[in-house]
Amino acid sequence: MIENKQPSSPNSGSGKEPTKGHIKLTTHPSQRDAASRISWGAASANERGPIVGSVNDGAARNVIGAHSGAYSVYRALAVAAGTLDPVHIADLTDTSPAACIGPYPRWGDPGKIVSLDPYGHMVSEVFAEQLAAGLNITPTIAVTKARINLPEIKDAMRAGRLKADGELLSETGDVRVTKAAIEPVWYLPGIAERFAVSETDLRRTLFEHSGGMYTELITRNDLKVFLPPIGGLTVYCIGDVSAVREPGKEIACRVHDECNGSDVFGSDICTCRPYLAHGIEVCIETAQRGGIGFIVYNRKEGRALGEVTKFLVYNARKRQQGGDRAETYFERTECVAGVQDMRFQELMPDVLTWLGIERIDRFVSMSDMKYDAITGQGIEIGERITIPDGLIPDDASVEMDAKKAAGYFSNEPQPDATQLKIAKGRDLHD
Ligand SMILES: [Zn+2]
Image (cartoon, rainbow, N blue to C red; front, side, top):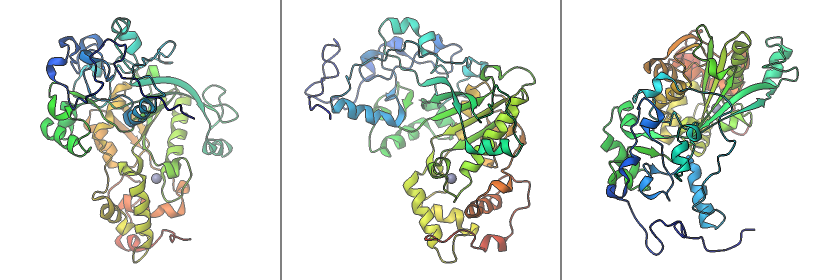
């Protein structure tokens, strides 16, 4: 049970300007310390400058929004409930990355990475001086090591497709991975450029469609970096994450967008988990022959439309006249959501650039949108690997046919018009 005490003022005892009693609706450029400028895309971390997002940092604060993406709302709740000290500064002892990632030459290109802070994991190292001076700099990336274990990988071992090597893959099916969690850090001019819109229009739309949540989007044109309240991503690497630029290293990659129903609960209406597991299998195989495998897991549930929209679409698909069929697969989504997809793969390649990847030899995806986004950012793609037919659940054949007909990459012929009219999906109550 939470003790019902009054939250202390964010500035009580901190010596910074008091806000108790009145609410500041926005800040002013003159309140910012000139030294806190961020030079996005500068050649080194120190020339770029730290990202300071704490709301208590006064003149040093140099971004719009708050750290931790959507979890910033929980942090606000914790402060409101009196369980979190609003001036708490993280103790970063022993939190440094468990593997070395970068810096890489493309980190210094302001157009190549616009949606994450490439130095986000190196904060304690590259901004040690500023941290020692009392600046509250929060890492936006954390890199650790783990072992993962999936029944599909054990199936692949039983079927003889994978063999334990005692190093990357154990007899019991444990896979050694390096994993990195990444929070979004948006450089607004760069985001605007990726979508070919003006920065002014982008700021205005973000402001209006978040219910006016961030006034500084409108009032602080001098602040170019925004910490958006959205989900981030996780990278799982099999093999040596630091060796990515060694000549001749074969690289496998699957970029996977979250689908909780399938990924975690094994729902059979789509191919998400089977494709994810297949991607992991290809990554292990590649790492075992001396290469590196990367799984990029983006928190973009239901094509970034969210799970409520997704379940509404499932109902609409199953209840429509003529049954659940490929012909109307995208149309039903559009009826509910207004669009077919909001994942915007335009920003997705940033993480690959951050990892130092300039070429993917084995790309485990059928998506043309992902392929075009990656190659559009100057990363080469060799072989494209489709999901083996045997891994597609029956109810997911509607999705698979619709995607093939829409031009997704496949080694098989596109389904014809008659095929697309056949109701292949299960009935809603079946
Ligand atoms: Zn799915």
